[in-house]
Image (cartoon, rainbow, N blue to C red):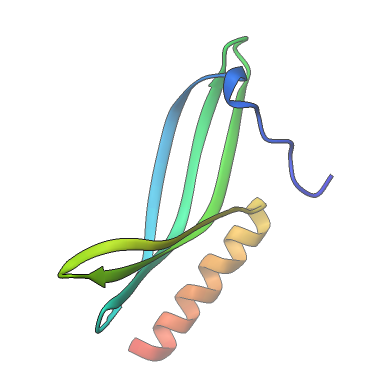
Length: 98
């Protein structure tokens, strides 16, 4: 199976760990975005736990002087893909910033 089956909300007792890893923020006039990675652990009511990781992008738009969320995307990824993304992003950052 490519993607693990996601637990149903009623099967979870709580999120026991979560972390957001910010990669980039960009602001252009009245539009901004931030993107990065997330990870966490959830514990089922029967004691089982599940780990989850992924990437996200949030686009903001300035409306009448206030920043509003225009688009919010979260995608889970496998561990190997996340390692590749981290290395790719770091390589691109070093190429741009020496």
